[in-house]
Image (cartoon, rainbow, N blue to C red; front, side, top):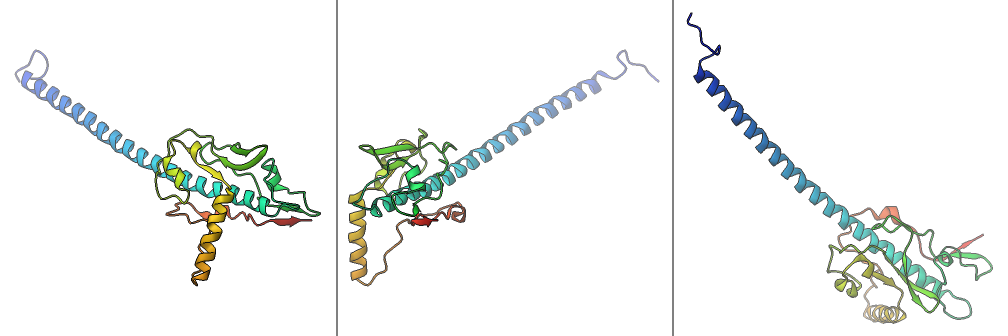
Amino acid sequence: MMGYPDGLPKTVLSSAGTQSGFTYIGLLFLVAIVTFALSGVATVWHTMAQREREAELLFIGEQFSQAIESYYRWSPGGPQLPRSLDDLLRDDRFPMVRRHLRRIYRDPMTGSTDWGLVMEGDRIAGVHSLSKRKPIRVAGFDRREFEEAESYEDWRFVYSRARQSRRNVATESAESAGISALPVIRMRNRPFDSARHRDAVTPQATP
């Protein structure tokens, strides 16, 4: 058998090197495709998660607003707003303590129970998130002022007596027309399970 200086013919060595190069390039191409696909999945998941937190924030914010309304309307000796959020948990202005809110919710955007407060003098008229992130949702709000928000901090859940007056007028008009009044909260396309948030805001007496 004829021997070769390098053990194999040069044509065989060249062919093996070319195949190895193609395999390496193909592997790099496959890795790039997988990385791109995973990046797209991560982006979609992040967007969906943020939309769910937005819906949760809208729900929780309205719970605070309704609790403040309840405190205001059930005030003995004349309507007044609470001085602190703790007043919503234990309203001791009555012989038996009343609860307008069962607990202080966590802000789904920050994960904290710290909330920004909207004040009227030394009284609390509403709350807002402390997150400065830009919202994804920009339309379809019951509170139309949210459409101009630049951050979640601008979603201010305020109990407005003027807003309540307009709502009462709308309810009375609907009832006079023989139409059942719509619920106060009308969440659209809410992606999260509202069963987790069934905290009643109707004042409850505590023994």
